[in-house]
Length: 411
Ligand SMILES: Nc1ncnc2c1ncn2[C@@H]1O[C@H](COP(=O)(O)OP(=O)(O)OP(=O)(O)O)[C@@H](O)[C@H]1O
Image (cartoon, rainbow, N blue to C red):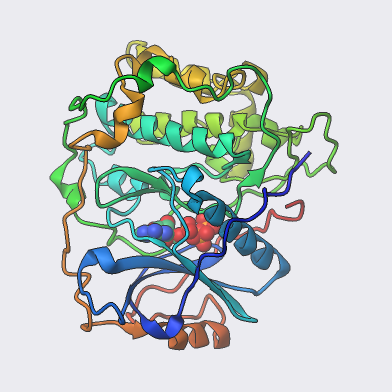
């Protein structure tokens, strides 16, 4: 059974659109536009005073519902006891009859998809994969412990903070599910929390070519949503499962395609696809068409070049088609953390790693306040009066291509 979020924390600050200016468009997805903005009242031109503002037009019942839900999740993540270093928090929000706008911390390093494509051979080394996957596991563990299945894990939704650590973004497809009551599901390892030493093991650098931030384009490259091939009506057999059909086709799990209901294990499947993509530069089940991709997801076993090792072993265990046998399905993230690929990882010290694989350059010129900034209200007015596909930005960014085949009927 789906659960409604627990009682909302105290309301965050209202985002005052008259006191902010936008510096550039950071990205456009199916539902929203994300701007880099700064507060003109604070009079500071440093990048640390900048933040990201997501704008969503209430163009349909589904965009309204999804934006409300995303703000709700962010609000819950902002409560002191729920804050996590790999998840965003809500800085402020604003709602008009036509729009939602909300501010979250700015991640200056772009997304993992762009970073991966900029590597010479389009792949990460296993130590870099270990670093990123470890942080993503912690983020998912935290969401699951709050009863939230993320359901949209893919490289485009993993942002790199100025510190080099990751942040998950885009919670509009996430969903509240009942937290499993299995013993030890979310028990942290008491051994780990006793030690607080610095860990410098992840010191490998990524190609310098990656130090440019996302300049390859503004829209997400592969954010096409999947079409339902089987949209059975909800038939929950247990309170922990959801039947809505969501995700991105190459990342979608077998149980979602089959419409059998799904739970937190969908995130561990997507983690397997993501890890495979970081290792080989391509996803394991991609076909020539969506239909072929789904068929592959259902019947094809992932192919691994080279000798088996801990990394391929981890991926294999995550890409088990039966969700009840998949790594993570019984004791959650604890099972994944115990996998030999992570041997030696100090889970409690991830944020203290001094040199993550890639640290974005500090102000690379994009944040020159006053040079190109534009009025957010004027931009909203343009959004209102122009169809999304015809809209061009004040900074001549490419037109937004919308990939949506709205899968949210059940949402
Ligand atoms: N905090 C942030 N810092 C920097 N860039 C960001 C931030 N939040 C979002 N972006 C950029 O904006 C893009 C779109 O953001 P987001 O995924 O939230 O939008 P969306 O409309 O919900 O996308 P989707 O089509 O997947 O639903 C991201 O891929 C990223 O490039």
